[in-house]
Image (cartoon, rainbow, N blue to C red; front, side, top):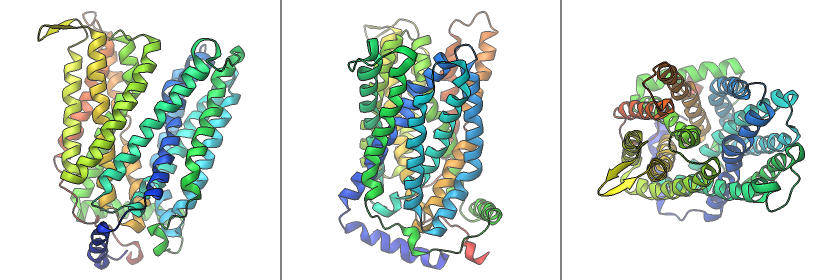
Length: 465
């Protein structure tokens, strides 16, 4: 897109804000996220990945194998996401690629059914999970880019918030179905056989069906995407990477605000991921939450996060994403600091707070502010992304996040190493809180360089280079 046309197109987009939005398309777009929650909530966090690590890989250090597989997947995503988005924009096939990648993800989820509780299946299990994560991330590049097709800048916050909220709420329902219907007791309320972990493996089949059913409304709904207006000649993979480099350099030279948004959001989003990735470990090892209750906490946390995302999206449209992000990340830092000192009984305002009660209160507070920060970040980028190059920018957004997603995990590993070597440290796992709060604080400090979005990002015109 020529730079000379950016102001005109931005003005047209703002003028269109008075037009009613297509509620069906927005609903279908949000339902995709509702179904996609199976990947993060069921397969990666609470059910299938723990099964692969603790049951399939019980005698083979499953955690290490899964970490290595996810690291490889992360490197591939970091190297390919922006180029995949860029090439999809130029081909005008954003919607087609979303459809193809969605079908691949559902196939990978369903294939997890074949992972039996035997050491020989460990490599297959971790490979499926890591590949599922990889393809799912690429699918979300195109889903996120579609926000520029279904709403305008003045209402992007609430639409993004509704999408994030739908994802959290979908996670609640499929978790409840999986846990109460198939996992709890002896095969759940469905009475599934537990021999060879058949009931756990059937969760994968249910998760795949859930995702496909709720993805179909969007996949089958005609949506005219902005990338179709300017279909360019496809170039070589090498030229795509050269254009990626020119985009990054161009942002540094011509649009420092967008550049610093990518850098700072990558850091604080890694901290946001750490809240959910390590929350269950922290609750059980430090604050006395039972293994059974931690799943209930996960369901409650998703409810709170969904409400926070929806409310944050509404506030975003009123005061802008900058305020929502700063307040949310700041509140996360404050909640984490308070939680650090509440691992023993404390008397506050005449009330005695046990560690378990403190975790429920301040752990859920953390969940409350994760949703708004995530939704407002997507809304921020959606406001500055030229619609016909949105997939490229959202791909770069994913890559920026992946390029630093070692920070929280690495800092936790380092702090744990130090804590475990100190005999005076009682709860070494509190290093998780220190690491997450530190990463969030660094991201918040970097975000101080970012100003409110004002027009499209100043991207180099690849047609002129």
